[in-house]
Amino acid sequence: MTTPQALADNVGILKTRMGAFFAGSRAVFRGHDLHAELRDMDWVELYLFGITGRRFTPQQLELLHGILVYTSYPDARIWNNRVAALAGTARTTPGLGITAAMAVSEASIYGGQPGVKSFNFFLRVQRHVAAGGDLAEFVAKEGRIYGFGRPTPETYDERIPWLKALAEKLGLADGPHFRIALAVEKMLTARHGHLHMNYAAITASLCADMGFSIFEFQVFRVPLFMAGMPPCYIEAVQKPEGATFPVPCSGVRYEGAARRRWKPAE
Image (cartoon, rainbow, N blue to C red; front, side, top):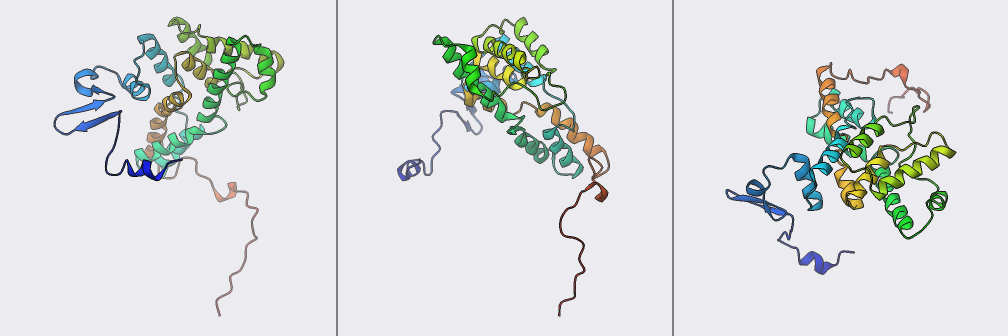
């Protein structure tokens, strides 16, 4: 709970360890001069440094780039991309439309929240196994395990073999959390054939092996789907206004009050 004194101590001043802008002079980014020291970073590397304060190896950065690229689908039927497309057909601005689409990406069934819950699961199960516990017993007691299964007719996630192959090529597929993810998938598919690993599990386990905290992983995921959103927005703008996902009156099943005649006021 924030105390009155804590609020009073911060009136009129911003205390920060993250950075500051000095007009006409320099910009400091986590204690480093942005232009003098960090100018050669690519955007994702700088983004990750801002989140974690840590530097990543070239192999880790390539894998993290892959995580973002491999799920960039410009399909306006996907729930978050649909928001971007509807924003385009309504002629709102790109910033508003894409930001709204990113906001709904934190959906609780198949968006950001399952990724966070999957990450939490891998941290707990890895500690259990490292302490000598039995993996099968832990899985049996867990009940619902986020990161396995998919709410689509096709239950196998087409992104998995590509990201797994990239991790293997880079020497990053042998961490304890990812090994557990593979073992859990074998257990679940043996019992329930459709519970394959999905993107939440593979990204959570790989990022856990790279030393992310749950919160860092959650922040890293914010632009996870973003590269697929602008194409959906742009295509909707290029079509006639309102022509993306129009719904005719005949397509609405109305179950409210029947048509009524309004009486003139007396």
